[in-house]
Amino acid sequence: YILHKELGEWMTDNVTVVRYNEKLLKTDEKIQELMERYNNININDTAKWSNQGASFTRQLDGMLSLARVITLGAYNRNESRGAHYKPEFPDRNDEDFLKTTKATFNPATNAPDFTYDEVDTSLIKPRKRDYSQKKQGAVKS
Image 1 (tube, rainbow, N blue to C red):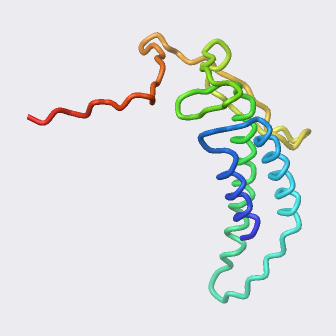
Image 2 (cartoon, rainbow, N blue to C red; image 1 turned 60 degrees about the vertical axis):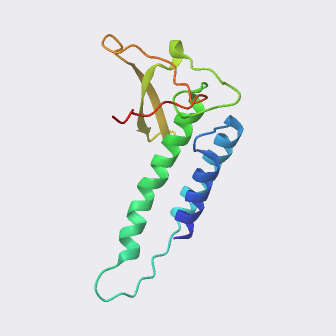
Image 3 (tube, rainbow, N blue to C red; image 1 turned 90 degrees about the vertical axis):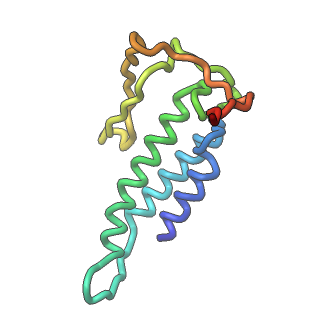
């Protein structure tokens, strides 16, 4: 449960709406450390009905892998898009990043590999989101 708590704290502090590449890289290093520590977990559950610690521990493995995908995926996108903002890259970059990010696990590197698929914008053209102005709500009759 300690590893889960640490993972949550690091993700909340560094991989939310405002993202800095330096913090994303430090978070990835921390996730790799947590993965190493995960390999040495000792599940000491004396429950007579079910071993909830074992069940939670199995789920934690996937959480760590997905946290790494999210963190590195965010690091790779040097732009601000939607609600995600990188102060070093304040503008949206449709030329390089109007794409769907796909990740696959690479056992040789023990890390995710990323590929990108083009987004079909033929029906709906992308437009800038502007959160600087308060929008008018629905008018009551």
